[in-house]
Length: 97
Image (cartoon, rainbow, N blue to C red):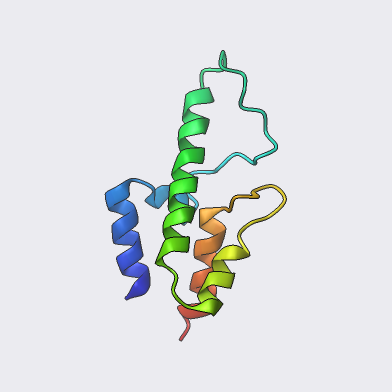
């Protein structure tokens, strides 16, 4: 039930593609300062969606094990978290049971 509810929320908020990993988020180390690049705005929007999705997952968590599943989605390449990795971690931990 938790996964269906969160995906419904993600669809309402417009970040379900980031949660499911169908939109790739640029790594934090990628330079997005080239405003002349026509895809600059798209990359920034995807990064913003990822931040919103990751933060929504953090805020939805109330149990310690689940929190660490989400927290483990912070990496060197994604220091503020990757929503799709957090989602995968949660599904791997809780969906089988």
